Structure formats: C-alpha cells, structure tokens
Length: 130
Image (cartoon, rainbow, N blue to C red):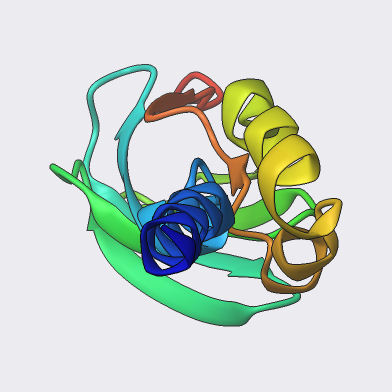
C-alpha cells in the first residue's frame, strides 16, 4: 500500500514540476519575418540585450533570441534610404501563468526570458524615395 502511495505521489509531483513552464517548452530563439513597407530590398541589423543579428530584407525569418527588452532595428535599403525603430516584446501570458502556478513562481522564466515573444511578421516603414 505504501509503495503505491509513493509511486502515485512521485508521478504527480513529476507531472506538476514540468507542466507549462516556458523554459522547458519554448525555444530560446523565435523566427521573425521582416519586410519594408515599399517592397524594396536592403539589410537590417537587429539587437536586444541578448545579441545582435543582421539579415537581408525581405526575409522569411530571422532567428532572434527572446528578450524582455524591445528588438531594435537599423535598416538601409539598396538605394540608401534608412529606417530605425523597435519591435515591442510581449509576454506569452498562458505560459507565464502556468509557470507561476506550477513551477517556480516564474523565476526561471524571468531569468531566461523564454516567456517573452515578438510579433512574427514585421513591416518596417520606409520613407519614400526623393
């Protein structure tokens, strides 16, 4: 009887420990597709506190490291026009709530930022040609 109780308790605690934690279920990097508003081509440099990436634009997806700060971009078209700006970092609420309830009060996710995300498709506003 006691052995069954210990086995059941172990299974329940194991399931409880891994349920919904963003650190376990989310990849550290997410793909983001970027395009210029006028359809032109160029290159952008992206940065947040977790790293710096560059990519030709348009792109099908740049793998960006999740972070709790905005994703800054500095772009230049092939004809020399420039654009700077940022993409807001959002919280994946359902994963953060699950990690707070079931795991470690969200401490691990807060350290790794794996509960954060950026929008998946970004159109960068490019000024008109002169």
